[in-house]
Image: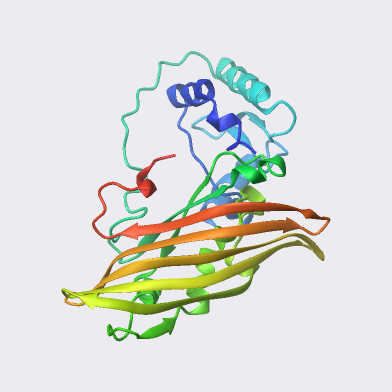
Length: 288
């Protein structure tokens, strides 16, 4: 996988950043024929028999090279980049100014009222013998204003309990696995989910909330189950009684992934979901 080795190499990162405009796309999005990304890229991808991995294109859409990600990934990626640059011709070094590419990830409310929860999933050190995923999955899930309201209490009194609607809880499917690309869990992979909430304390016009639950998913290809995984989630939230709005949400999770053909191998991982209305500095702001 590119995130575990290729895209941790400073030399490769600097070479791409100084000569190209890098764009990262989720594999599942590309596979969806109705997505905007798929409609744009599918005609271009016909130039080369390759669905995932690295693609290098000219501004006009000509494919200069690509690499699917097998064998010597670092060495082959370097060669693909240099061959593509040679084919394109002389280039002035690109000096792009840093800019926030996801200004609402993990904080604030977007103009349309939606909220973007920042997600980070990482395998534990003990699991590296089974899956070479040293770099974390940096993801996010965008919830509409109506969906995000499920995290807030209907009655902000101590002891009030509620359960997040299943369709909202399923949006956190990504936290049920440390895998990425075609193995990234989707809401329709979820086999079991329940996230319960309670108002723990109310003081100074603020309600302190607690969340606890579980989300499980299964990756199937045809009739074959590729993997099964589950995450136990716990967390807290802050709700402002005066404005009737959420101020923050923080969920942490501990999960396990198994392959049916190798039940003795268990991949353990940790998950984080966070959002803060007024956050200025948080782990969700790290740009990748």
